[in-house]
Image (cartoon, rainbow, N blue to C red; front, side, top):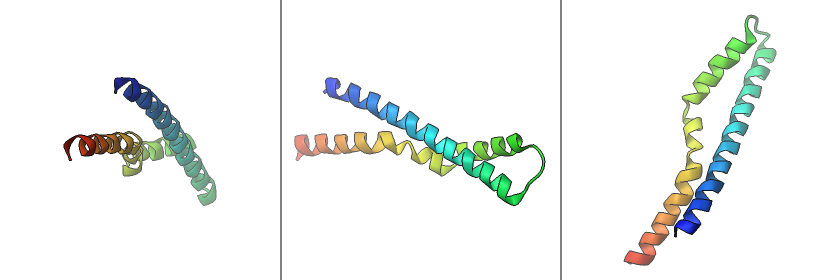
Length: 85
């Protein structure tokens, strides 16, 4: 089972990092677009930093952890079902 679980964790880790980077870049682009659309003045980088800090604490950011939870949870359910029912 470990021979299958270790590669799965590696694939899930790569997927998590890729989705996390993609999501963060999308949020950054949206913040910059918002800055331009509203015609805001001041320090744009500070505005983007504050927006990304809010994003880091958001539920959406934590939802990306489902990349680990869903497959591992399904495997646990399947193992339980096949062994104990």
